[in-house]
Structures are given as C-alpha cells and as structure tokens.
Figure 1 (cartoon, rainbow, N blue to C red):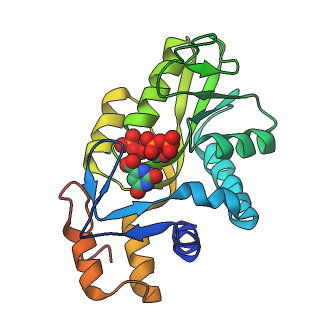
Figure 2 (cartoon, rainbow, N blue to C red):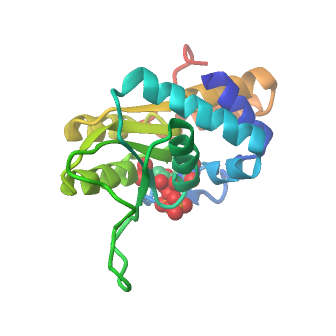
Figure 3 (tube, rainbow, N blue to C red):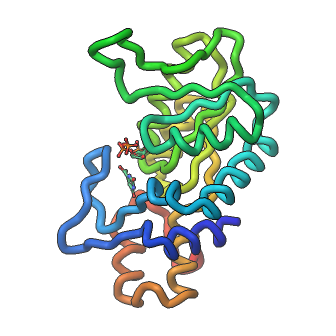
Length: 209
Ligand SMILES: O=P(O)(O)OC[C@H]1O[C@H](OP(=O)(O)OP(=O)(O)O)[C@H](O)[C@@H]1O
Ligand SMILES: O=C(O)c1cc(=O)[nH]c(=O)[nH]1
C-alpha cells in the first residue's frame, strides 16, 4: 500500500521539487520538496483508494470511533469520504476560531463522550494535526489517533506525537516515496541524493532506499 500510494502521488504530479527556490512549509521549514495531496481530490480512482486505505487503517488500529474529524483545510474532503464509508458523523477543526459568525473553531458536532479519529492529508512537523487533536480534547472527547495520507516521518513529529500521547499512521511516507521514485527512474541520482540529506530530522538511509 505504501508503495502504491507513493507511486500514485508521483503519477498525478503531486510531488514537486524546487531545490533552488525552496518551498516554505506551514511550519516555516524551507524544503526542496512539496507534496500537494490536495490534488488527489481531482482523481476519483485515487481518492477512492485513499479513502478505502484510511478506513482500513482506522479499522485495524482504532477501536470503535464515533466521529471522524478533518483538519482544515486539506484533510476535510478525505475525512468526508472516510466518514461516509464508515457511516459515522463528521466534523472538522479550523486552524483557529473564526473571528465572525459563531466564532467556531470546531464545525459540526463533537460531543464529550465521542471517540474521535483525526484525518489529515499530510504530516510534516505534526503541529496541525496535534492542534486539531487538542481542540477535540478541549471539547471533552477522546482522540483515538490520527490517520494521514502521507508523512515525512520527521523525528520532530514523532517526538511531538509521543509527547501528546497520540499515535499517527500514514498510508505512505517520505522514505517510501524516494524508494519508489528511484525504482521508477522518476528522479535522478543527484536529485535523490539531495532529497535524502536535506533535513537531518528525516531518517532516510541508504538501507531505506
Ligand atoms: O505537520 P505540519 O507541520 O503541521 O504540516 C502539515 C500541514 O500543512 C499543510 O496544511 P496548510 O497549513 O498548508 O493548510 P491547508 O490544509 O489549508 O492547505 C498540510 O495540509 C497539513 O495540514
Ligand atoms: O509542511 C507543509 O506545510 C507541507 C509540506 C508538503 O510537502 N505539502 C503540504 O501540503 N504541506
């Protein structure tokens, strides 16, 4: 599955490289790579595969969720497709409360007795998913864990999730993406070398590839 999803992300052009003019991630990290999972919603076959995969992860790892919670914005459509498949209520959490209207951060219903699974499109530092998890906890509900389409497997994220006492699982990850890119000849050896070593927080070794 990890290889499958990585291959599909490469095939739809979700992965972009820009070593000369690095992308700025939401955490402020400057990166030579950006993985735009938002594009997956435009591909019905792939988005179905992702939703099925996320449901499989949830069923295998999290016991009897009662609500599926999307992270705004990129997690929202995937959370909706997962909730639909599982016939569960859905909510989503904004990065911060609205400054107008009802000033909600949480949209939809999350009740104190709920057991929530958070659906995220991508985990870099984990800050966004953990912010959502914290809001869910503030609402009194239990967070069973987080599922995501892709994770960079940053050690920083692993530490943050551990500190919060929350687990996360992803359908694919950065080491797998590089492995598949090499197998498919999508990236040159020089590009792969740069992508392996650009961030010491990412444990991509020669063995991984
Ligand atoms: O693990 P993190 O370091 O928090 O980074 C990952 C987050 O960054 C992106 O969202 P972005 O902030 O670009 O907003 P969007 O979902 O509204 O596009 C992505 O969709 C994740 O939510
Ligand atoms: O950390 C981020 O903001 C980020 C990285 C990435 O590769 N893709 C994305 O959508 N967000």
